Amino acid sequence: MRLVFLGAPGVGKGTQADKAATQFSICKISTGDLLRGAVRTKTPLGLEAKGHMDRGGLVPDSVVIGLVREKLADASSASGFILDGFPRTVPQAEALANVLRERGEHLDHVISFEVPRGEIVKRLSGRRSCPKCQATYHVDLAPSKMGNVCERCGEALTQRSDDQREAIETRLRVYEEQTAPLISFYEQQRLLSRLNGAETVDAVYQNLVRILTTR
Ligand code: AP5
Image 1 (tube, rainbow, N blue to C red):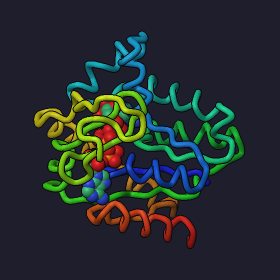
Image 2: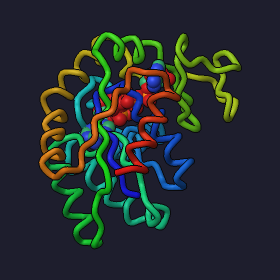
Image 3: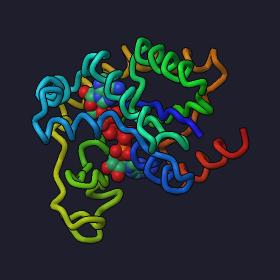
Image 4: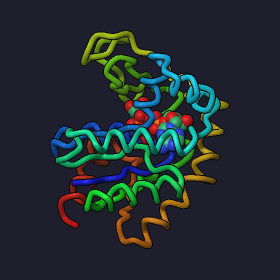
């Protein structure tokens, strides 16, 4: 199964991608996680990406396309993948189509997660993440059972630098301007399914599985 999870920041793409990757034994490729990893280890790519990410802007297409191309060439992607947060611009979507064409593959589904803006802001401002294993929590909506420590690996949880009010506003604007046009891009290709992401994590997941297994 080859999937794209599309949606504004905070709609729950990462949360749902973790669950689906486990159930369907496919690999999750999150460009956000890859970029944050590069920032943490201070690679040249990470140093270039950091400023864009902290401000809530997009990292240049050429950088992100190169990262994804590399990941898709990895053996772990051979049995399928979920692209979480990629593509985010029309040039990225066109580059993805080219890579898949070269490999004789195609996307099976593009899921557009939809959540009202007020709920998104609430989710992002309360999010806590594990810098080691990337698990995600929320101080009120999905707290770690171990307080401010990751349930999976015991690392102290942190708040992402782009989950501050000003960066959240920028990310939402950038989504509307640069990423939302992908909804009609994929609708025209009859690949798009819209999913209400405002329900509980389990309810959203049930509806997601229904889409993935019935279309
Ligand atoms: P990225 O990490 O991809 O961030 P994002 O798209 O802004 O998405 P988020 O991770 O914020 O949200 P999500 O939808 O995954 O929600 P989550 O499951 O965590 O990108 C970060 C930055 O990297 C970008 O701004 C950009 O600079 C750069 N970048 C990345 N990809 C790029 C690309 N392709 N091109 C250029 N630049 C790129 O959930 C959020 C919170 O809500 C959590 O606390 C969670 O516990 C909670 N929650 C989830 N679901 C529910 C639910 N159903 N009910 C209640 N709470 C819920």
